[in-house]
Image (cartoon, rainbow, N blue to C red; front, side, top):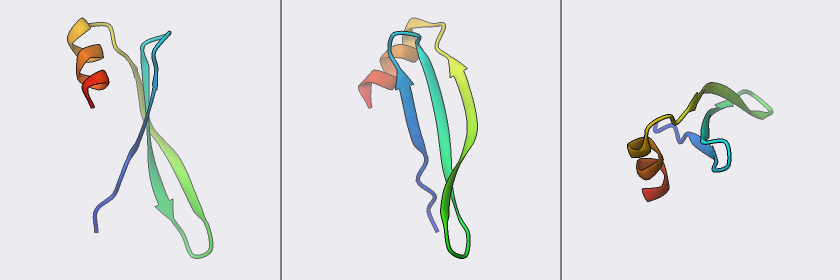
Length: 50
């Protein structure tokens, strides 16, 4: 089973937040995996490329 993660990118603050879905019996929730600051220009280019 493939797990599709959700990436939220805040361009003004250069932060990326990564969520992963967790499917339980009757509900679907997203859990925060990580959040990080893109302090290098290549990180910003990589995120904006996708």
